[in-house]
Amino acid sequence: MDIIKKMYCSSLALLTDLYQLTMANGYWKIGKAEDEAVFHLFFRNHPFNGGYTIACGLAYVIDFLKNFKFSRDDIHYLGQLKGNDGHPLFENAFLSYLKNLEFSLDIDAIPEGTVVFPHQPLLRIKGSLLQAQLIETPLLNMINFQSLIATKAARICQAAKGNPVLEFGLRRAHGIDGGLAASRAAFIGGCAATSNVLAGRMLGIPVRGTHAHSWIMAFDTEYEAFEAYAEAMPNNCVFLVDTYDTLAGVENAIQAGKKLRKSGHEMIGIRLDSGDLAYLSIKARKRLDEEGFVNTAIIASNDLDENIISSLTQQNAAVTVWGVGTRLVTAHDQPSLGCVYKLSAIRGNDRKWKYKVKKSEQRIKATIPGILQVRRYFDQTEAVADMIYDIDLGVPEEVKIMDVMNPIQCKRIPEKLKYEDLLIPVFQAGRLTAAIPPIDKIRERTSDQLECFRKSILRLDHPHEYPSGLEETLYMRKEAQIKNNPW
Image 1 (cartoon, helix red, strand yellow):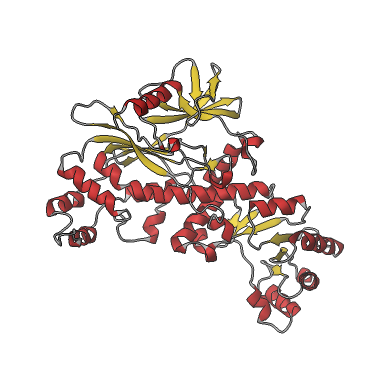
Image 2: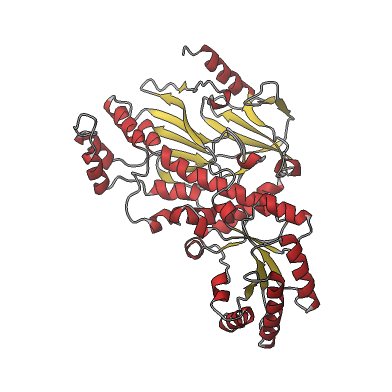
């Protein structure tokens, strides 16, 4: 796939925060660079007050890591950085170490398109402490944003109740990178197509688009504009009808559609981009049907999101396609997912694991010690509970899942339930071992995953909380470490 490599010819090893490099320098200088460590990347709360999140961004992570290397220019730049005493921040020996660094970590990941829940590791990173530290920032950058947008897209598509959703957000996206990544994540989340032509070419996403108000305004009359567009693009005719008077625009579109039909082509649809979309769509549908355009789509846009679409659906709006832009690609109501990346185990020369926990004034910020895996249990095809467990502790015969935040809440798992471990190997000793599925297959996985959960968990407002937590022994170890560590 090489999405990142296609966009950037130069090295991206410096796509990080400075403190990752200063810590790496410290590890190297005191002899801890090659200590074996385990980090996990996870989030603490679902976005949008929802009941689920869609994992996304792994393909970018893979592209980044398989090309991870400090270039000569990178090393030259780092050599020019100064400390507060005016002397070089990094000594030449450390820069030589970075120049010769070969990526060698083990990475396990939950596949893209998987429904995930708070505190579950989306990525497990194991290997050199220095290397694992260096990649924290870019991994968070790639997983945070795309998981957020994929989740927003899934919610919007859910509100659309099976009608296609088109992603129209490039012009409002946060830069070139944000636009491309958002188009990718939106498609994985369920959108049918994008207006972003670069995303179409690079990622294989279907592209859709018509014309803007400027096309209409470039002609003396609205009908003349429709007629000219039909002549120029007879196989792509969706007429934007709200430049002047929407219902009059519908009539002009009908007349242009009749002329188009005589030439052997069909009007694909009309687009409403302002006004009372429920009222206007119902009126437009009635007129289109009366004039024989029963298959002509009504596309609605104008700062839509899942809440507005749900409201319009409840008003029996006659919209058959939804165009969603700004509020999708910017995750308007929650612009950050809040994934974090935490050390959970380390071992030095004695080869014994020391499990690490971050204690905090806020209970939700206390981390989970160990080398973690996520197990999902199924009753037939329905997902019934998820359990985070330590692969060294294993799973007992009698499974009890403890809520991370509330020890009173627990769930016992009946024997012989089917299960699936979600983290799968992606890199082993720096070598890529997993294939990246085509984007349409990832999108199918999202749809299939959502089918596995009860509707009460997926609902947009006040969702039911899905049972997800820690295996009891792991929970007890975490609580003991928090209580007994001498901070």
